[in-house]
Length: 224
Image (cartoon, rainbow, N blue to C red; front, side, top):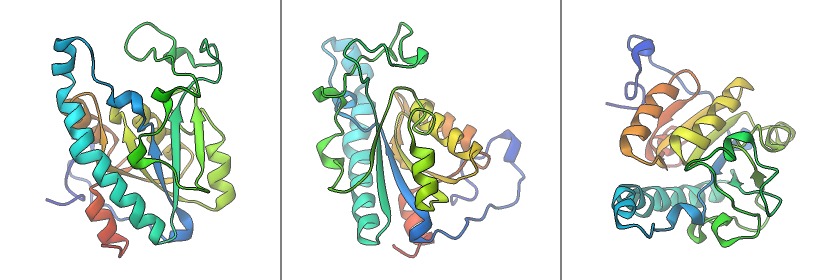
């Protein structure tokens, strides 16, 4: 089974095989969303630590190494690597969107300069790479990224990061609504649980994006 047949929802079970647009380096960018230190912090409570253990393992063994290799391959090919991170500009977080203020897990108070809000060292931006800071889920809605991409002549956005069912999904939908061609790399994303990850891939695939693995993308681009 290839990317053309995986992750098909009820709506697209019998749809024709999808095709990718030309992914020229000058019209393509890699977007890395919210792979920040806060996602790697181990909970103090043993029960919570055990509950998040599969996510932590996926981050260490799958997402970070795959995305790091992809960043290096794209840089070598002259393809822009862009980073988005979630952080509040004010210490008390008043500038955050409503979804970031509601009680619960998503209520993350991460001022701009805190260690928790920094991108993990393995995936840190290189000099000259664009980093946008957002105070809401979508990296497009919460920043000037739409303007930046248009100014750069980018038409194709390769999306990676966390969490698949939250900030990644919101960004994918926003990009699609703005008529960007979007590719979501399933092995460079993670959700709190694998079931949430897989379910969101099925929802997004073939309408808001094309879901692929990083090795499949590199082969399609002639970079394998």
